[in-house]
Image (cartoon, rainbow, N blue to C red; front, top):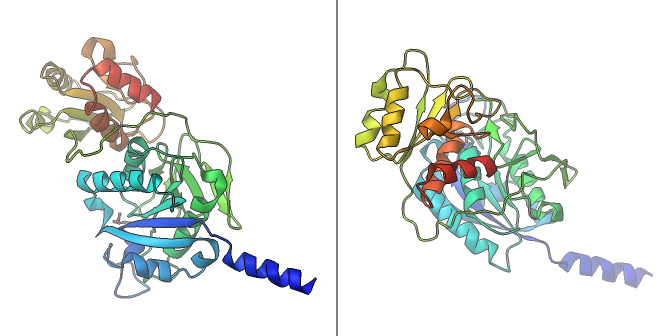
Length: 341
Ligand code: ASP
């Protein structure tokens, strides 16, 4: 009996743990402040090796390796880094030695990176993005628990096929629906329309639902840059000169973060019509945090060849329009992407 128990323990000790690879990009999770009790800090200072070492419990649940892609505040995120990340994830998806991928990232543009990667990577291995609201040097830094929870999510067999997820403050969110909703609090992320996908409890990912299904991804392999798309934020009394300079600056698409259901000021309307005549795609989105921007509400999209953003906020609309433009110039086809992705 004792021999069997000893044997079981030995086998257990050598049992293969899942291999999780962390791609680190910086952010507050890698931030350093001069003092632990004040808010001033610089994002993107600490290397991934140190972040992993700060959470020794990771060794109990996975064999974790790290790779520093960049070390920046995510306010400086760029298409260039996205293209590198996307390509690297597709490589890791095909690598039989890797079971799941975690990305450490600043929270400012985390939702954008999550959505971009969800549309440009293929495979069923979990891709989990995490970060922190408090620098690694702060009292009660949230980074270590977030990294741990991200790895818990990545090793959980239930996470296979869930796509790209964001794990923050014990909650799991889907890439398309998640958005940052607080500038300071550790409870900074929500999916206002759909709710979270699940939560982490006692080393387990607990799911309430699966994310919206789609099997379409944009093949951007080998691309060095993406189509130029910008966002114009709508407001009372907005003047045409907020949009007109985009014509001579090479924009292929404009996302108008309109008021209400993507409504457009009367002085901007003719400028956006002109954009369409010049072949620039126009997406009507909304600055309102919840609710879709629907087709043919107060604006006759068919008549103006505008695209309605549906459930995509302006920053996610920009990403989808960029990717759509790598495939087509047909506004009706682009509208189907906005309806379905
Ligand atoms: N500015 C930081 C960043 O996005 C904020 C954070 O990570 O929470 O990198």
